[in-house]
Amino acid sequence: MIEVGEDDESAWAITDDGRRFAARVLIGADGYRSVVRRHVAAHHPYGNYAGYIVWLGQSDFPPEVNGKDYRVDFESGGPELLALYPMVQGDGTIPRYGWAWFDTSHNDLLREIGAIDGDEVLHTPRTTAIPDEVYETMQRRARKGRSRGAAASPRRSATTM
Image (tube, rainbow, N blue to C red; front, side, top):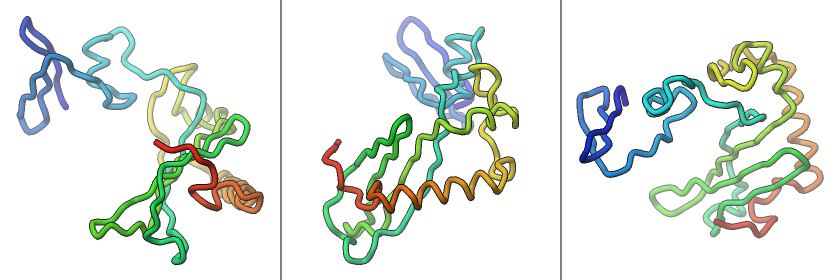
């Protein structure tokens, strides 16, 4: 989206290729650099920092669980949360799962590299801005969690959506 607006009849959005979409309601779910937010609240162009960074990734299921009926799961460990979700292929198999690790332990790092200022999100950090030591620490923490059973099976807890 490059532009949004409203008139007496509808709210509308224009894409970068010139297409115009109109509806009674426009939902601004376009991220912290939201075009919608800049229109609705020009005085507050940045998103508010929620207090965590989300590490995203994909992993292979072990062959013995491929194709089974897995659902979205959430694993909680103190102030952190791990979300797991199956990545279903066109043939119905599930060889991979996606994960999102909501991490509250690196807030100072985000401030140091200028990704957040106070409670405002200014940009997404590039992978090169994250020191190797952080990746190494996260890998150790993930292995430790798996050895306790956390995230070892995407259906360990019964939370389903």
